[in-house]
Length: 213
Image (cartoon, rainbow, N blue to C red; front, side, top):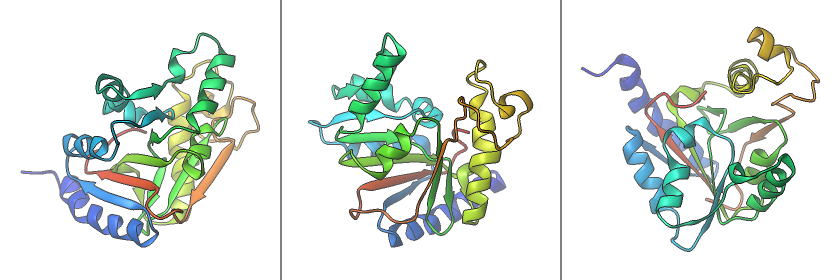
């Protein structure tokens, strides 16, 4: 017997898809991660240059590894030898054909909210790559825009900053957002995407599983 939460995801997911489509996103719901991964690569032409932003969801689904294995030309900042080279590769990623990422929150009425440290991920979502594919677990779906901002600041940021022990932020010390102005803040930029323009450029794939932070 499926868990009550899984049943809920399978009912709510298609509703959120329709809300996203009403805001001009490409959008799909898949009950399992395996189905979602198949959809991701069906959307990427073989000749595309592929890059990605920092995302535990894309890593967990092995999308970055699979992109390389499938023979796509990739722009991978993790191969940089220095922080300066990493920043330059991140800039190059803004002009790729397909950009893979996740999102910090999705509202039930079809909006995305994302916090970012240096802004490369939210910049790519807003402009640059020909298409952006956002893969997101249903655990990130929230009721309202206020809930989305709250999740981004109070859940996603404090959890994600634990991946970087050297960062000197209140949330790294306490696990709770301190509304800081630290140079190490990972929510320097908080961006609401309320509509997709051009139509269909951002493609959101909702997955009926708990993925990412």
